[in-house]
Image 1 (spheres, one colour):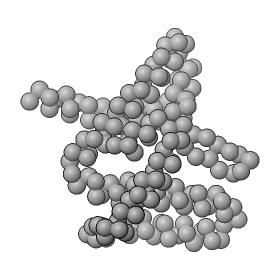
Image 2 (image 1 turned 180 degrees about the horizontal axis):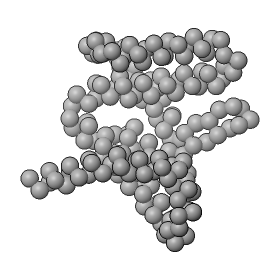
Image 3 (image 1 turned 90 degrees about the horizontal axis):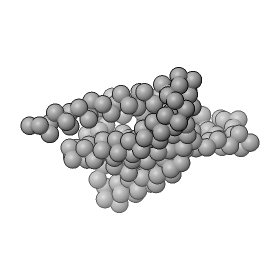
Image 4 (image 1 turned 60 degrees about the horizontal axis):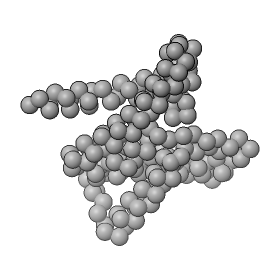
Length: 174
């Protein structure tokens, strides 16, 4: 749930002089979770090898291998290493760790509610800012900032939450 909670609350920081950018608190949290996950797997030997039967895993591993080779030949090694690491922690957290965690349906529910609760704060923030300028069309491009880059992404994020909320409402009447 921590991964899901921090995602909508993340703010993007760009350091053009150094040629890289990152998202806070998302990327440090994901990096920490990746380290924790792989340490746990190495210590306990708890990795489910059935995952290697999935074709998607081979595509992801091929992509990661290609990125490692690209780091070696890169003219901007700092950017390439960061790009590889960010892809590796996303694959680790959302594919490998997700595969293990989502075997328990309760974890799926926790993940969704973590995201929806945090995103509700972003929605409230956006509504207050938009109301402050009279809900003008011109303001739709910036009222979601700094949490969401533009209103199209914001609309997609809203759209992803609606089916889960509708299912929850329908099931609560059963």
